[in-house]
View 1 (cartoon, rainbow, N blue to C red):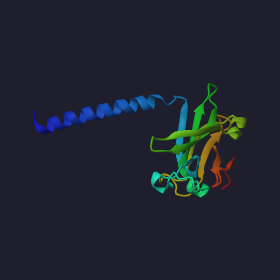
View 2 (view 1 turned 30 degrees about the vertical axis):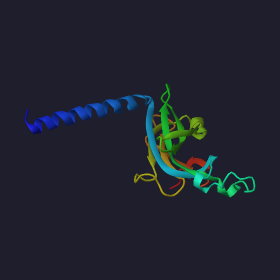
View 3 (view 1 turned 135 degrees about the vertical axis):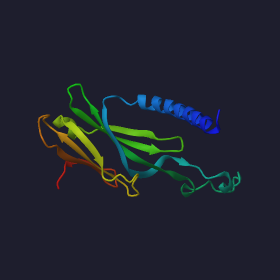
View 4 (view 1 turned 45 degrees about the vertical axis):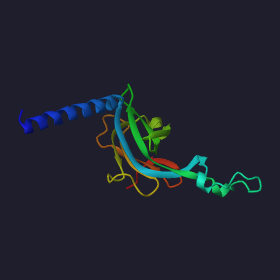
Length: 177
């Protein structure tokens, strides 16, 4: 077999293995998820303190004082947000917000909440867009625009914003342009 042909066969094999792993991940996504966006950022302190390293600990001598509260420092936690639209059997949509922890073990969902402001109006979500598409923001918070109709025959969708400020407060309101 020619080297070019052998390379292409190997590349195809790698692509198939990679796409098989991806297919397993993507198959876990419910077919009713019509829009999923990620963005924003958050940072906070870990609930569990990280004790000082062994080198910084005093000898196990009773005359030495125990480590102070300042010596035990919480490790910072960082992450981002996800906004998800899930289609219901009646074609309306429920919108969920997730807080995602970025860790060495991979992303983990810390919290999922249904945004009741959307549930109350029983919307037909037509699009969700992040504030920008440049990646994870360096500024804390999150902003996305949800485009929806309250009647499927409605021609133009209404715009609503989902805003999370730097303190983690969530606001959902009709967009004012």
